[in-house]
Image (cartoon, rainbow, N blue to C red; front, side, top):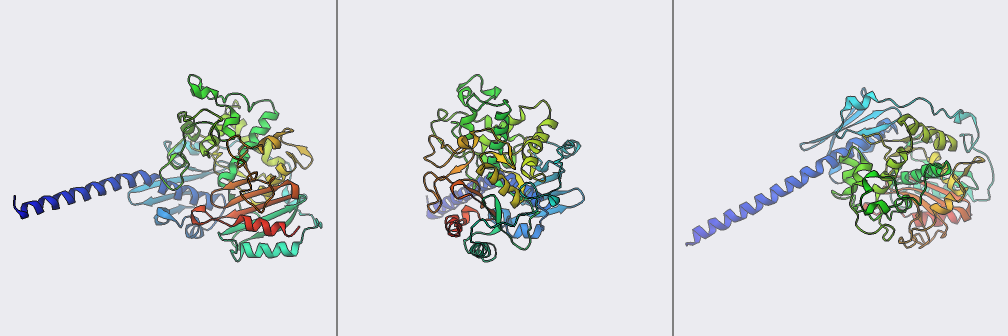
Length: 454
């Protein structure tokens, strides 16, 4: 065999190898397109039609990363929808009153638009005319905190980005009183902000209310019919809430994983999560899983005889009672609230929620959560090494060394935080876009500075 023949064969082999790589990459990229376009369509649609933000601002900040920044997005104000394109991929998300925004997956747009949010849920008050905490007439009260220093911290955080990240809103309560409130110029006290995983703690509160009503029991096996004939039947509601279910799960947001598939491919997120097989015995291993929260959200829905009762429940028994009547808890295409991720509420709403838990489940003199529920929620999951309770993060291991050990928190992966510090009578809310993939916000230094104002 001469050199020319050998050279041709090597060249042919290299071309085949390159072709295989290109085909493999194209197949993998094709599998990512629903995530890329779905993320852009869903989040831009919610930002525009739930939060009333400028789409150009959202694209420049919230969508300006990875492949997401290359999507071409079209906002239709007449039908209240967003369609996003990338290469040959396309996704559409639609807004519906009451339901918020839903990404179209395995369901027709016509079918979803025919479903109407139930009437009712009237709070019976106007926030503009009543006093805090139910209303927006804020008290003028000296709580002993140094408000001058606190305002300096607000300026550094909001205007100067001095703590890294990008904070849109900031609020501090001391002794139940708002002592600091600040927003970037494009936001205000009426703006609804995305919760991301802070929504999990609101699911905790809904379970607490149902426990108080005698409709749920955290120590009993979760009522998932599909688990009855295998070892998953031993998984309790408590296992799910403490993220020790034992179910197989991958929470990697930077790749094609269980969580990105659930949020961007699936029409029934709870069903997707509860179909996961057992990986370890329940209660033996802690690992963060947004899927478990959507299973719990599915279980909440099962407690009601009708969807109308299910939707009104959240308003009547939680949001209206804590001064948050305009909060929007979005649903998946099947109609179940996306408990893992998709709540939209104001900075004041998030502060009020923190106040509910700081005050042991009592708000404005009314007991909302059962006695002992906050203690349960902040008791560490056995395998979490002091990091986690029941859909709340803990500081028992001093993960944030500047904060006291009794602090507990709601955290969203793009820099959304509610810090509850009972021993200091503080609630701190930080909202914005500070993803951990870009280093995140230095919240330990922020909390240290805030504690220095006491």
